[in-house]
Length: 153
Image (cartoon, rainbow, N blue to C red; front, side):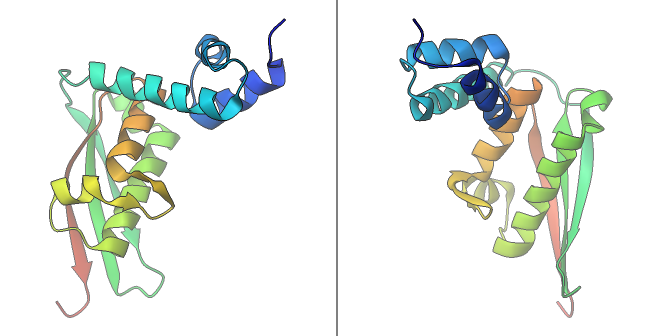
C-alpha cells in the first residue's frame, strides 16, 4: 500500500511542474515523504535541463521591469529554442522575475546574476530559477544579456 495519495501527486505536480508519472516515482522513491519527493522532483528537473545544454537557442524574449518609483529599470534577453516557448506565459513570467532581480540587486554581468540568490525565494539562485523553469517547460534557456537603467546615471 503506497504511503501517498493522489492528492499528494497532484500537489507535487503543481509545485514542481513535473509530470504525473515523475511525481509518482518521486513519492515512491521518498517512501511517501513529501519534502523528500519535492527535492527528488527538483533534482530530476535540473537534470533534464542539463541534458539540453547542447541545444541551439535561436528564439527568445526580452523582459522589461520598471521599479515602482520609475527611477530604475531593466531589460533582460532570455533565449530559448522555439518561438512557441518564447510566447509561453510561464517563460515570460520567469524572464520578468530575472529583470526584477537585475533592478533589485544590480548585477554587473550575467555570470554574477546567475549566482545571486533569487529575491523572491532565497533558497534558490537565479540559475536554479532558470533551470527549474527549463526542466518544467522542456527547452534550453540562456540568460543572454541585460541592461539596467537608473535615472541620472
